Amino acid sequence: MEGAEKTRLSQIYGVYTEPVFLIVDPEGNLMHRTEGRCTAGEMLERFRQGLDRENNLAAQSRDYKNGRRDPDFILSYLNTLHIAGLREEKQAVLKNIFSDNFPLDSLKKPSYWNVYEKFDESATSRQTLFVMDHFQEFIDLFGEKNVYSKIDQLYGSKARIYIFGKSAPIEDPDFLTVLKYAQKSDHPNASIWLTYLVPAQYKFSDWVEMAKAVESAMSFNILKGTSRNLYKKSMSEQLAWYCNDVNALQYSIKWIDELIPQVDNEMKQSLLYTKNEVIEKIKVLNK
Image 1 (cartoon, rainbow, N blue to C red):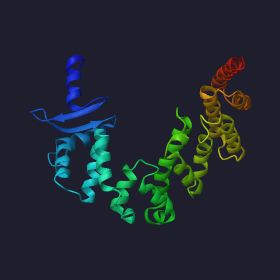
Image 2: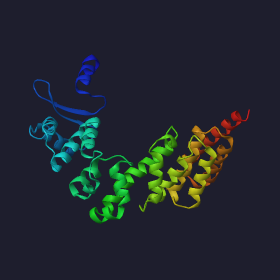
Image 3: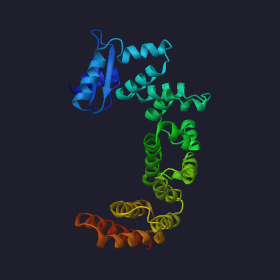
Image 4: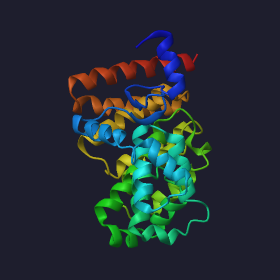
């Protein structure tokens, strides 16, 4: 379907990405919706749910509106909203559950932990900070694998967003909280988060200090092998793309020169291209 009709239906059903699968009744009312790619088995299961008039998106939305709040239903409804790509609706349900008055000790109950583990996407939510403050207790309750994975998902991704973003991390009101909790965390990957977070605090504000922080991170040999090479390459590119400080740009050239003898030809060509860009930028800045 293309053209004006596609635009009209997209506006009616709020479809702004592809693929989206919709089930509507004969009157055109939306009964179920899924968004994003999935396996054949997942699609079949979603289709079955969509045909279930007691459990599809429309039915669950009706039940929630009518006050249904039992934990199993809430978990199912959040999953339905997640699959449907209805992010605002999902966040509204989460905010209703994890309100400012939510008793944080209740996170120790499996029903609430399951909701938190699957759907809380904030590294600085009250729930996440409570888990970080009572880390071993949650490990004892729900196991190392589950707790480690959840926190690494939040802090690992946040650390990379900060270092690779296009704005100064220090201007984000959550940044110092993320940095503080990473610094005091007993998580086995905390040192890896910090290889990104510590330099990130200087990005766009003090490029030389950022470069020194990168040097310091590499001196501890936290990242090894391919991970170390990719880290050094990405840090050299961050300086090449965003930095206008000649003194800091020298670090980019230094890291590239250190990498070239260690990498394959494809990466070597990429590094040489970046190095030439840096050299040209320095020439312009020195004029």
